[in-house]
Amino acid sequence: MSRNGIAADKLRRKVSIIEAAEYLGVSERTIRNWIATGILPAYRYGPRVVRIDPGDLDALGRRTGGAA
Image (cartoon, rainbow, N blue to C red; front, side, top):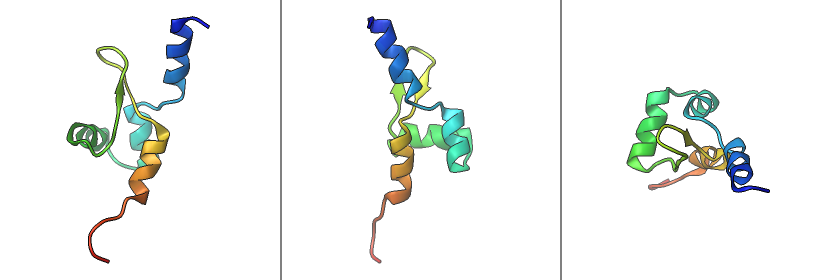
């Protein structure tokens, strides 16, 4: 498999900012803010393509903290 084939395969396993926002029921701006503040990890593929691992989206719902 060529390098381009590997990169394309990795892109297919990640979701766009729009898809992430729809999945979580929040705005695109919220997703971008979470990425900027480090709450949500994201991966940049070139100057304009940002993708998010679906597992990271699920992890947002599992975080706990503070006193119970």
